[in-house]
Image (tube, rainbow, N blue to C red; front, side, top):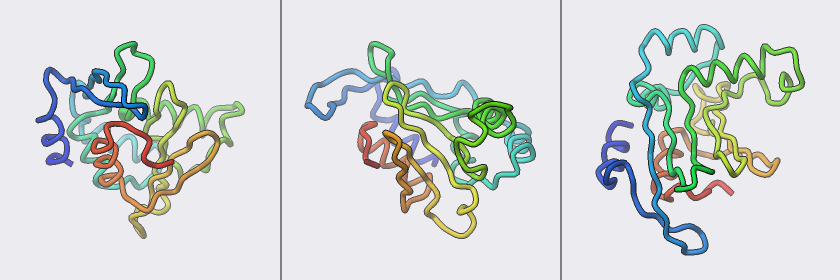
Length: 169
């Protein structure tokens, strides 16, 4: 993960870069990387609370940047938000421990790791598949689920290579 992030950051100027959207419109995207790495204690607390087995590549991301906002548009209306340990725990508390309609929205073994703000897509890791398979990334888009045959490292690399475009649909 470290090499992927360092190589990508090498293309940024002041945490920004120009990209083209699907209609060939060029705009300046900004990147807010987590202010600090997740501590081992934060990661251990997350795993102990949820019981989830999280993939090493995702944990490596958290150890480098505890969350990030990627491809943030100039109007601040959309970005790919990769959750911090605190945001994942908040999600867990709302979706799995809360006494509300969210409780049964997703299977308990799905760890929500982020979302595409302004677009409505949501990203999960199916923690029940982590040990046995490299196919554990799930994207929800327009009420459809896409179980991708890739791991987090490959998903993250493709997200960066595609300049935040929705390669999963």
